[in-house]
Length: 147
Image 1 (cartoon, one colour):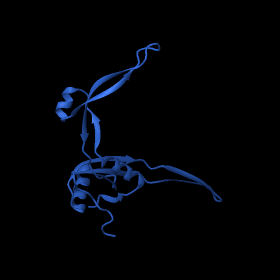
Image 2 (tube, one colour):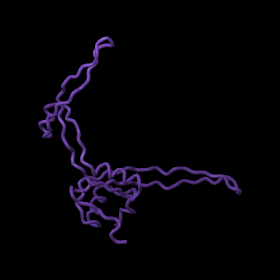
Image 3 (cartoon, one colour):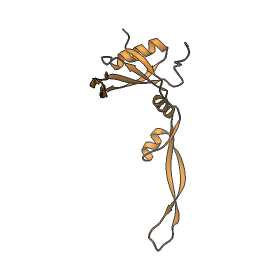
Image 4 (tube, one colour):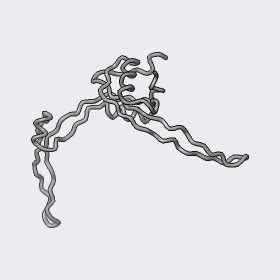
């Protein structure tokens, strides 16, 4: 049974995947977390201003930074009755990749109305479900390969 309706290859989805496809440098909250994450210790100079009369002075502060590896994320519009396991199995079957995580979100149909010669026409766009699939490190999906 086909749960995936179509892949999302839009500008907004490309921005999401580009953000997640870059390694990020983050700060550890404390020393305990830094040891757990394997963070590097760095010394940073900070300007401190005590009051209006005293001039600013520099103070050395120790911070712990670590890099968060990038993950490949792809979006799909799926049937509203599909669950995460079904979506995961179908993506793995169709694209021969390993799915690590699936996030889903439901979008309600928007009401619309417009004025015409015949009067006001009211309607509603259909609701849909979107799934964002995170793949195993190093794997990609090429949507344009079969064109």
